[in-house]
Image (cartoon, rainbow, N blue to C red; front, side, top):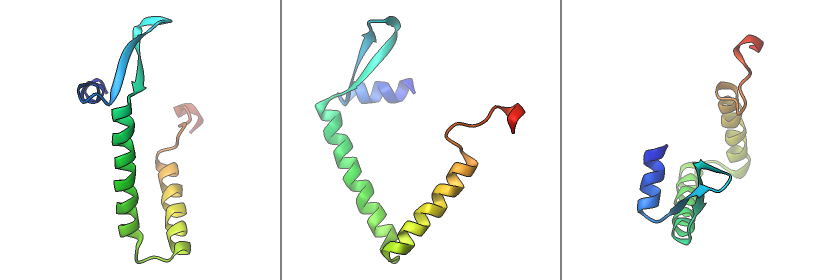
Length: 86
């Protein structure tokens, strides 16, 4: 994670400053450069998704998304239960 943050800071996409409440931590802020980069990436992702899903009609696209989401949530839940509850 540190390497990713270093790269984003080096390209001026984020600003890293000490947390005033806990100087051992950093507060990460998206810069205007970072916001522009994020917006460009969002467009590229939307274009790639549109191209990938082009053969499917809207209902099929929604169904595929629903099914893939169900699989992802099953295999990688957002909040996994502790081992003793599984």
